[in-house]
Image (cartoon, rainbow, N blue to C red; front, side):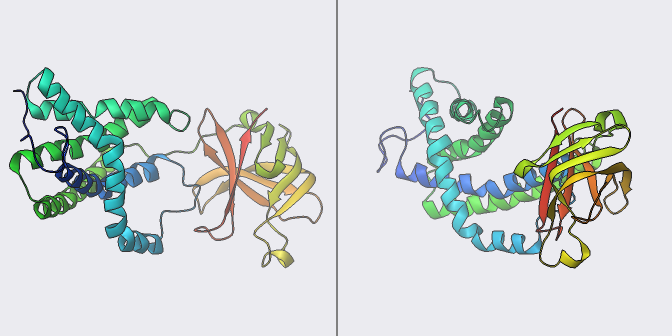
Length: 303
């Protein structure tokens, strides 16, 4: 018959059952801690944190507290978006094409991943979204087929998924450590900007504009700056306008190169702007206030 699942189980339509929904939600949520860990390892390694550091202890505590509630809900969302379409396609393929069940369940998650990848193109490129969505759909789809063949009860599905979640998390932790230590995941490095690359016009939020000249002169419009000594308690930063000077500067505390900007007048104090972004799309940034909860201001070169 080319089918690997037992037909006619209660609550189903021949392609999926209520038990399949539970199995898909169980593994869909169970894989998320490992997926989140891998995302955090890669993001914190290859992306610029702008000197703000990583998630604090309070954030970790909040995640642990709400995980038992959020994971099943997120797993159910993945079920309807990715897993059920893949399961239906796998069973349709089994009826018409035959072949190993595990292979069909392994391949079919690609179809909904491509669909949703196309929908989310304004947010992510296909080369990013399709592999990620496919990876999130593969394990739950295989799990549904396995649970139906073995006729596991719902409690058995869920405790096995919980055990698998712990194994996946440890594997992600070890794999992420090895990948970062061996250089498979290369750490972020800020660009090296020469005077010629720095000279030009830089823009930021709120109408901020900074013009840098090769001779060390600078002109600012609504530019964030360190507040004067008498005003630092009430304001994380102030916006200044006018002329001034700039020079290359190295931040020992961040281990980064940047520029020291000094504007004439008493609007604000000298401000250290560090290099960020990439060599292709360089940035100047400064973090005002608390490193964990301060205000990040970024300037991008536009001319």
